[in-house]
Structures are given as C-alpha cells and as structure tokens.
Length: 275
Image: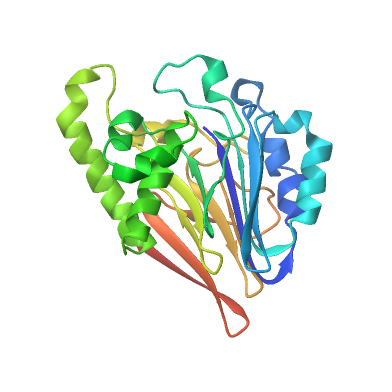
C-alpha cells in the first residue's frame, strides 16, 4: 500500500503544507505506522515552463527528509504529483530486484506523470499485451505495467478515461484466461488508484476491491486505506490517499469514481464520473 498526492492550483506554488507540515502530511504518513512503513522509495513530479520534471529516490523518505524538503520547496508549479512507496511484489522477486530508482514512482513519459497505489497481481500477463511498449518497462514494479498500458492507449488516441476502462477490460480478460495459474489469488488486482496529469488537467481515480476496504487509513484510521480524499476550492484542488489534516473540508472520492480537475477562467473546476 503506497500513498499518493496530487495538487492543481491556479497559480504556481509548492505543496509544502500537505507534503511536510500537516499533522498527517505525506512525510508523516511514511513513518507514523511501524507496521506500514512507506520505506521503499519516493518521488515528486511537477511542471516547469510547460515541461514535466521528475525527481525520485529508492530510499525511505523518512531517512531523506532534508533532501525531500528541499525538493518540495523547489517544486513550484500549478500541478504537483507525489508518491511514497510500500513495495508490492506479486512476482515474488528478491527485494534488491524490486527496490530501485527506476521502480520508484511517479512514472513519466513525455508530459504525462502517473502515480499508482495498489497491486497488479498479473503484471507479466499485462506486459505481454503491450506490444512494442513492453520494451519501455525499465524496472520490476507491477505498477509500471499499468502505467505503460495507459500510455499505450493514450498514444493510440484514447482519452485517459477511455484508457482506464480499456485497462480494466483487458485485466479482467487476462484474468479469465490465466487465473488457473494463480489458484492462491482471488483476482487480478487489489487497487487501481491513480493520480495522473498531462500538464493541464489532473485526474484522480479510486478503484479497489472489497477486501481492501478492511484496511484503514494510516493516520486517522477513519476511512478505507484506498479511499482517496480531496479538497476543492476556487484556488486549488488537493488529492491525497488520506486526509493530511482535520481542519479543512475534505471529501471522499468513492470507489469507482474518477475526478478530473482543470483551470477555467481563473478558477478550479472539477467533474466526478463513475468509471
């Protein structure tokens, strides 16, 4: 179970309040629960002069707090996406294989930035339907197969919403074809939560299994661990794996919902739709 963060703002700013300062900031989430340490890497993606910038590490964020803080301060943008990692390992690989900078998130291609929380339990089957895009996979993170599938579909002309639908259809079809090889598994994924941006819009998608609802959020333990939360004002849209504070008007992004945010006439607009 990883942790996600996304911010869209009318004017460029940093996200220090939510990433570092709040009582349940992303940094606090990384270390507050000893049984769920987010110790397997971190990353921040943002945009500068219209171009995506990505900074990642394979080290625990709580061991690099000063470095993380300096990156947070320099990431001044209208779109920021951050991720801390508790690595999944559906292939059963040695730890040294799955922990690396290339396997840390977010992932980036052109101006697309993508961060996932969940588990793709049949990553090799997904990789095998990527065609030429399979060669783009650089690490051993199951989330990377999800990322490249979405990019493949977008590059072939689909919208992000359509790519999400196509991925889920493909995942179910692959599961129906290959599930006999995995008698110990109950399904092809645990969570498909994503924060994604093309540099203009930001998207947040919450999708997880009923079994995942049993696990609660790390800090306040008052919502399912995979139920995203968001704050929407005219000035900014904040998306987080869980509330970073209890003083603002957080709303839940319920299972199966896609939130899209964009700036129109100097204000943040949002749309929520079922996928």
